[in-house]
Amino acid sequence: MHAFPDRPKNWPSAAALRLDAVADHGWSLLADFATPICSLAESALAANLTEVAGWCKGLGVELAPHGKTTMSPELITQQLEHGAWAITAATPWQAERMIDWGVPRVILANICVDPRPLAALLAREAEVWTFVDSPESVRHTAAAVPAGRRLPVLIEVGSPGGRCGVRTVPQGLTLAGAIADEPRLELVGVAAFEGTVTGRTADTIAVVREHIDTVRRLARALVDLHAFPTDRPVVLSAGGSMYPDLVVAGLRAEAGIGQEATIVLRSGCSLVHDHGLYAESARGPRLRPAMRVWSRVLSVPEPGWAIIDAGKRDLTVDPPARVLSVRRHPDDPPRTVELVLDHHNDQHGYIRFTDEDLRVGDLLELGISHPCLTFDRWTHIPLVDDDLTVVGAVRTCF
Image (cartoon, rainbow, N blue to C red; front, side, top):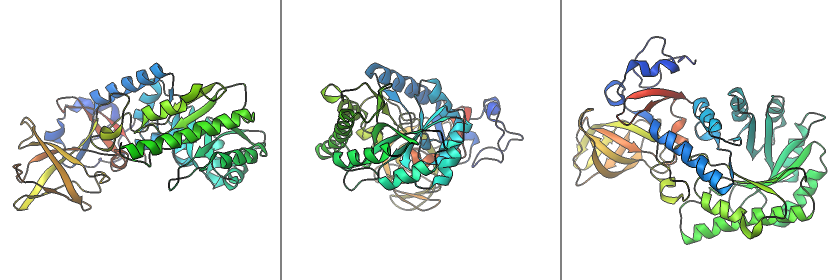
């Protein structure tokens, strides 16, 4: 079992600390750890794993959660144990780490135009799929594939002003021809990432629906051209953390694409959820936010202006964190508040307040939005029970 290579940030000092022995110390998060400290609620993680697996099974869709969210071998292993069809990576380096952790199938959900890291990845003993979106990306990808092997690829569909991906069905059909000319590539599906659109308004819903509809229409056109293998289902995949309901409805619309299809959601934040971006926009599985960052008030230099000890090096500021509760002492019951951090420096956060009573030394519970950009601030994150007793820990490997 993993031994900590060094004392993790703001953890108690402990000789020869090991991941499997963390619970033996009987630590209380607020009494024994320095602030700021990030934690994960064990009960919320367990509930989300079960909820997402059941929701996907009920709709007949698969889950390939984006591992770049946590880059945690312990959490990714739990997702596989709860039926994940694959794990998604954003880079070949991430994919190789996941294979090290025992992941049997990795979707490289990105365009890779450097053949060297892709070739190193393809030398590993695992099933790897990847995306292409242009004849140039097809050429670079094919150059990395060993002789005698065929790499499964999906055509990525993007939206105007968005990220990678073809923008139209005709572009996708042209790209399929380029793939067919490469004997080392095999077209197996169509994919998209709709998460660059944020918020749930009539306008954003329309954009997401159009994006997903383009995926389905391209897939249907490719089926008509016999572009996919007929001995297995076509894969239709999208991000799905913020709009899983729209993704599933759109990809299943109009009785499918004319060939058996497997819908694969790549929801990265379904395990942890949040108190902001996803809590406000996502519809689908009933998820619980699992991540908190705990901080202390360092100074109240002006009325209604508090400075805390958590900054950009400790948590995401995209969007800003929310103050969920305040404790005067670690053993005090929490007092619920509704405050949002105004802005951050590297090591400080700033809070405006009017009716609340914030004092120097107060302990603040911060709810995080977009947890991807908080995980990478911590090499080891304590798992806590509902009483904030530390019952374990997970690693991150960014």
